[in-house]
Image (cartoon, rainbow, N blue to C red; front, side):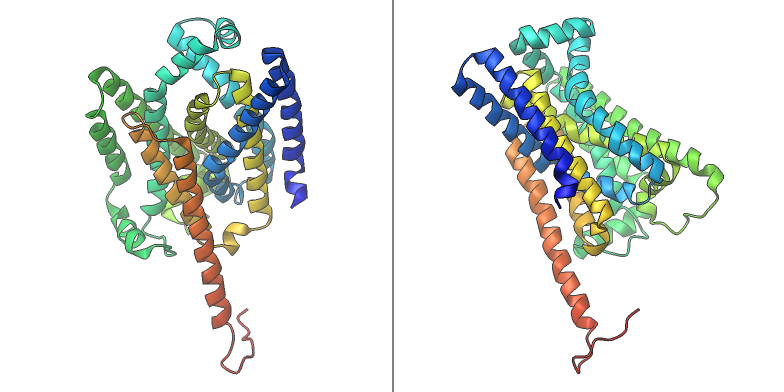
Length: 366
């Protein structure tokens, strides 16, 4: 276990040292420095709790991914996740919203964190629309799959599986959700929300299209794969599309965490340290899940992750109208995955019982 998390623990130690230096620079006080270190740790734990389902979904793609592109995602991807989404992305939002250059946005983050926070949180409607729509498509595509024969909650999943024959149903559901929620908010925000949501849909379709184009020359060797995860399978086989799919997916998961982090601190660098720790642990969990074949061993873990994605997408979309604490979001995701894990353990126990003959001798089921 330690070998998977060694790098994350070392990175955490580095971030805590940097946090201590930053805290002393800001407060010149031991108590203030310890307070900042506590915020860094809390942000790291919060990011892990919000993104565990991200690790599971990443693992579903990485297990079929070309080894070269898998290494690239686990190296380049984590750099993009830590520095791109946790530092550059907020700066880009501030630069666009305040109509200033990136250097001015960085200066604003360093010298006027209150204004910086106001600009970032002001972009919450658009961010929630984009991220919520993209994640909703990811979750719905998993369940709207007529070839999906393994169900965790059959009373829900079987009807959805049969509805997969209706072309464009997932897009229709997301568009109706965007329209319905837009009616709950001010007209000037509604247009931003719907526009961002449409771009989230387009981003999902674009990644799927890239995967399909790159797969076009590879024949029909993957025809037997589940249709509902066609984008994930196509991306996993094409390498580049897999990388793009996982990066957009990680970005969508990160939106909520980046915005929610301002509830604890309005300092860009403190937030980056805390969320960076979380991102590293998510990477370590992803590697462990792939190496150990955990998803195959615990058959319903993947289902729990996609239920958590649907829940997160719903919360992101509704957050433009209702204030939902980050802890609630994290607990819902962790709870769903925990229940799926328990169900997987019970299923394994049933399989083991079935493999034993009435006399007590184990049957040969190879």
